[in-house]
Image 1 (cartoon, protein in one colour):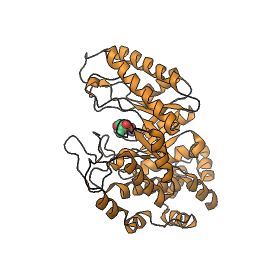
Image 2: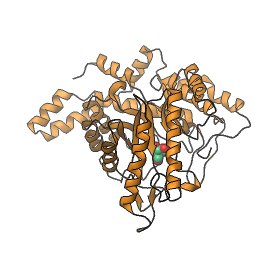
Image 3: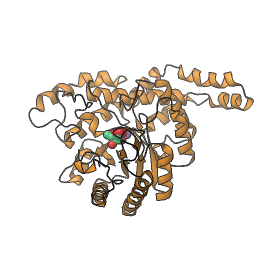
Image 4: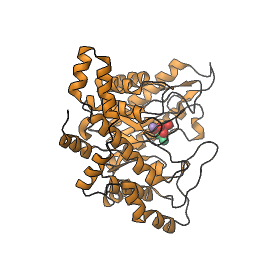
Length: 388
Ligand code: LRH
Ligand code: MN
């Protein structure tokens, strides 16, 4: 049984990166709802992300998305983040919102479009050089909608060529993370639809090319913790996009739809000793708060990850392993369920107090008056959203 001190030490060292885009207006194809006080600039998004770190203590970095977070001076953006007590994390490329990418970006049949896409990916590495970021995160919307629309194999060749070209641009210590997604916006083939395709390309591209798992990017019923265990075993789990879903890529708050799944995933992460920040896996939230207030939703999401992690850390590994070795199915499952059914909220509240934080981060944020302040200040300008 892990002693509480080591459980607390592990939780204290946990790091969860925040997505800048979660602080802007988001929605679905039906409607993007506006909310008062939403940031208008990447700097204001970082200010809001810094509030999440202020009250949770475990979210010191913000992932940016280019061009959603395009600025004139990225070194200045990094300085602004540092002044706010956080830093710029993963740089996400965006080759899915330009008319030229109708038939794809790096897998597009048109070489002119492919080189335009590669040029953007190279620009994102320039951003990493300026912000000191380690990871270039690539998610491609590329795919087809109808059988015969394009050659499945040729698209893979084009993708591989682009990855290899960008990989040569990476500097020392920089990594390329390739995210897969089963479908949407493509509805017949997606060029990187699953972990096998992403891993195949990463193995072919180089040791600093790693796979990103996003909770919402799988077919219903997929055993995601199995995929996590396999990628960690291969030392190729470069990133994990936390969110949850009831149906498709819903991007809801992590743990909201399936807290037991999150617990099972964190168990495999801990079993592989991959939780520590130096472990090589970037854990981040990738969510959209379409109807709920964004900053408290991000705080709640970080707390959901902490709760699932704490429960997984409380699994009595000795009992579990002994039962597994003995083939005692019920005892083994029981060891998992005993931990999962443990209320870890008092433990986390105590840990926050020990680290000088309010035991209830959401309540502390509400009392801070920050929400009222930004609504009063952020008048005029264009609220940030997926489009800008
Ligand atoms: C794609 C995705 C990807 C991001 C985007 C905001 O669905 O998960 O990680 O680029 O959301
Ligand atoms: Mn994602």
